[in-house]
Image 1 (spheres, helix red, strand yellow):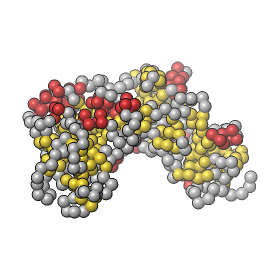
Image 2 (cartoon, helix red, strand yellow):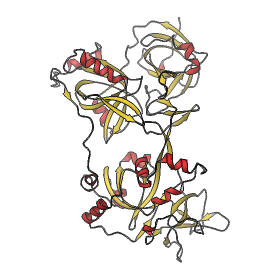
Image 3 (cartoon, one colour):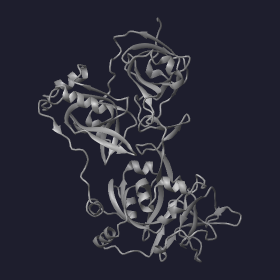
Image 4 (cartoon, helix red, strand yellow):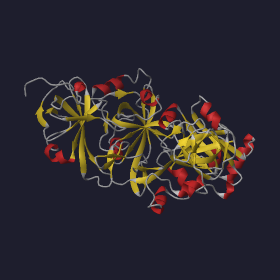
Amino acid sequence: MAGSFDMIREVSPVKDCWRLRVRVIRLWEMCSILDPLKPFAIDMVLIDVGGGKIQATIRKPMMKKFKNAIVEGEVYTMMNFAVIRSAGNYRAAKHEYKLLFSGKTRVFPTQSELIPMNGLSLMTTDDVTKTNEESNYLIDLVGLLTAVSVEKELVTEGRKTRMIQMELTDYKGKIHCTVFGNYVDTIKDLLTNGVSPMPILVVQFFKVRLYKGSVVIQNVNNASRILCNEDIPEVNDFRNGLAVNGIDPNVAMGELVIGNPVVPLADDFLKLYPRKTPEQLQMTEEEGTFIVLATIIAVLTEEQWRYGACKCHKAVTLDGGLYYCSNCCTHVCEVTPRFKLKVGVGHWDESVVFVLFDSDVAHLLGKSCKEIMAETKDLKSVEHPPDLKRLIGRALLFKVEKGAEYAFSYDDSFKVKKVCDDPDIISKFKDRWGIVTPKKLKFDPPFPILVEGEAVHDLCDSSSDDLDVLVANPVFLVSNGEASSSSGSQIQKASPIFAHHEEEDAGPGAMKKMKLNSVKIEKE
């Protein structure tokens, strides 16, 4: 067809009559985990003569019309799309928008030798690892396969998944790469087909993950591609640079051992990480993992106490009536409830807010999130179950992670990686640091505390009956049901919190002694 074409870089929602000449560099089916043989969508990555790339989706109602009309690697004239914002944690193109095929979309085969074949946007291992964070975009990387593990089988919630871990090396360093499912066969086939001692791999459309504090890359089901010793300019350039950079590809490949040795619980909390008090944790400019001894003072309820999770344990979102996991880049039919709980903790006159996750909360309560939900079916979704009150008054060791990204992601609270309630380890920790168990604690959250007049619930177990909690700058409910601070200013939209509570007579602005009742919070 004659006529001019739009460039991918120009595509935006200002119109839907875009006319593109593009090559389909990757095309894959999106399938449910529970029914992998029945795709619900087709995704593809398109590239034009200018090297611009954009992701496009064919949803189920349109699949019959387009499924056999588009072949990976071929060039097409495409026109008339819906243009929507590109979303999700793992995107196959860096374009701000993506294309959605509709009944008006037209596709015609054509030819062009000028449009790139593979559309690689190569990064180095240093580019990937230096940020020390997960990326919202899938990446491409070329490297020598310098080590590979034996095949292992993972069992998650009754489902078995095969995996192989590899080490890829380029001029800048090394990175671990894990492949799952059918991609295991790809690696096994290339290793048994007489390839060179260290083959050159191109991994395309791989996701960047953080695993045990290290950056790794992993395949995305159906979307990722692996090329081995491919005769393409990018691989040839990499091969020609090996000798210059002192890398010998003829050395025998090594064996990679998966996983880290199991660290004893006592070593994890007593030897491996520095200790911080709650105040030191907040004030330090250091980033890393620290051990904090503190007592849970309150369960904060301004946010949900649980979330729906995919099998990968990442939260799912609603997308067109279906649950979507941006981590797996697929819709999921089976969602598991998991704990995510904010708690106020304190030690003497220092306090801080921690975020506890599923395994730790389940361990402390002796119940899974699913079990608690089954026991509290009549509870409104915004209400917190009574079982959570049992956390209050527990003195624990917290293994806490601090970094700039956590302050942003967790709203100035801190992510807890692990909790220790072993009395022997806690006792040794106290002895090592000469810590005396406090009888009074102060909770000074970054928002005022609203106090209801009457005690409604006994919120603490008998082990903490002698523990007093001081709450700074309290705000009391007045008779008309509104709240006011000591300065008389009104505070709206209070949400409940479980905490200690007992009033003492004091002047304006003074501390209030709180013990074992119901408290509300208002976030400024």
